[in-house]
Image 1: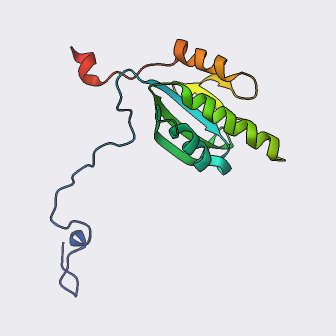
Image 2 (image 1 turned 120 degrees about the horizontal axis):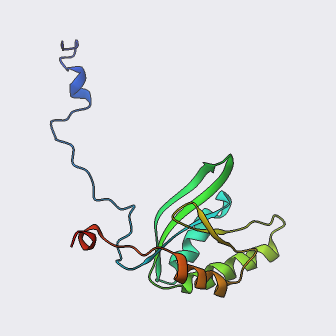
Amino acid sequence: MTARRDGTRPQDLFDRGHPFQPKAKSSAPRQPGSWLVTIRSVPFHHDEIKQAIESTGDARVYFSETLAYLKGQAVSLFRIEATGLQWVDTLWRWWQTLQRRSTIPFDIAVYINNTELLARFSETTPEQIKTLIRERAPRYQPFAALES
């Protein structure tokens, strides 16, 4: 390629002479044996939902999307790895409190394998949700453990 008037070549604008170094993947589960679930709810409460999930210390949101469109519906997505289930009670209490105060009702749905509906907060109790997670949610297994 030819140089521009200022002496730079087009490829020099993007290539600074350093090879691409991918960053460590942070949007993946890390804790072997943790339950993997996905939560979907309204985008308006994204930050509060994430805070409630992570507040107990037994669950981590390893991926979240503030605004996603699934089947034409705007939702917030949370992919969670959980070593315990206390976060379900905390999120449930927060949701119940907001339902009483808010004029616009909303629901929180729990999925496994990102697409299989497990439960809705409006239709089940926290104990039922925890039981369903224990019985049906997949557990994280690192690749190294699968190869042996």
